[in-house]
Length: 385
Image 1 (cartoon, rainbow, N blue to C red):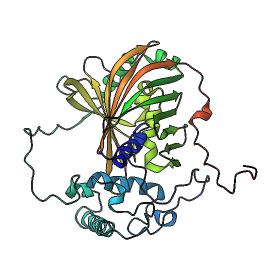
Image 2: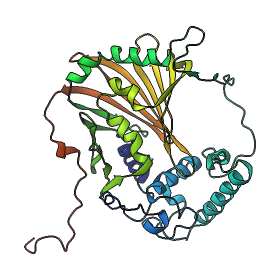
Image 3: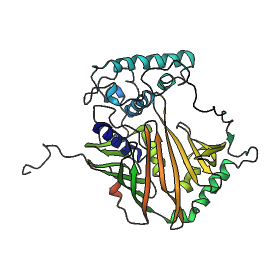
Image 4: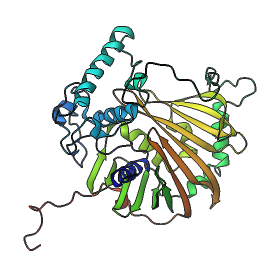
């Protein structure tokens, strides 16, 4: 693996830490490092970025997820279509082809599916730059389709209800009283990125909705933070980028310090998905829904009742971007169960964090989670420097 590819993996790893999206270089233009003014109408992509032609009418904060969906669907990085550091240019044929393909895709959905997003980039590309027209022979015998999900209040064939599984999860994690006695947590360990490299990592969390992950690499720190309202990421020599729109939903869920106790309130509706296997162990799947949001799917270990897998989807104008977190190595710390290892899997690789040390109820200044200030320009620096 060459040096550039290695550091692309590092940049990708930075974003996984806070359930952010998988790529940082979606646009050649910098996103302002501050939230829009209260009451201000959000800009369209055409207003906020240069030379947007097909997706010009979508909200500007949906352009990043759209570009990430294309990257995931074709298995490419941004420079496959874009000129590096000049993303508005039309010098590369794949960019022109991508525009035509998006127009075609929208037309197919409009003319055949009443505008519903049934056909996406991934429908044809399946992770390759060229669409696949020949069915593949599976390496294993195909698994039967999972049966229809069952409403949370109705158990099927002796299975527990979704409500019962959520209640068991709270108790398995230590119970509401013990969980809410903890107000902060600092974790130290190592993260392993897809190329096998390992780096030190620290995770700071504070009730009710604050979280910061900091990865230390030879090129400096890479961080992803959420301060309760705004999410951001920084690193690889780039200024902090504010996370907006659909990118915030998974970040807020990940930052919920009391998630085991809050799981029932985090979603509007639950459905039992049935019994499945997670890493060879029996588990129960539960679908979680919120009006106007992408769904989530939680897996609870049959024996312990603990959450062992969470699958989330980030909305984009072109399709849903999946992310899966597997939780393992639960240990009791101050009366609550804490996962000491979790693996985040996305379309472009897996990232595993192994925690080595946990401290709870330690003081953490709220300022630690705030969006970093932009570096001063030459004009802003004092004259005597």
